[in-house]
Amino acid sequence: MSSSEPVALRLIDREFLIACAPEERDGLLEAAGFLDRKMRELRANAKAPSFERLAVLTAISVTHEFLSLRKQHDSQEQRLSDGLAALRSKLDAAFDSEPVKR
Image (cartoon, rainbow, N blue to C red):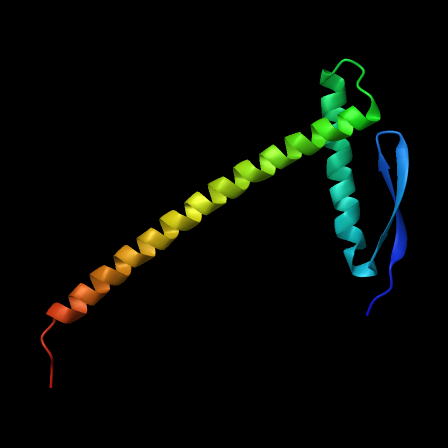
């Protein structure tokens, strides 16, 4: 079992210490960097929001983006699944109509 280590994350002008496993450190830092960039984008387009309001707006924005991508992924996965089923049916039909060779 791995131990947790504190990692300092900076969002806008605030620092947060988050405990995480050493193998999760890089992913956590990447996520914090992404979140910080999104918060800065929203802050540039908003009228002086508080940190808390900015955090909520960013959470909503990132969640919306995630759900849209997930919906797009699910749709692509369904099309792929349908395409594979159609190919399987064609193969089955081809094998069923082929005379048996002895």
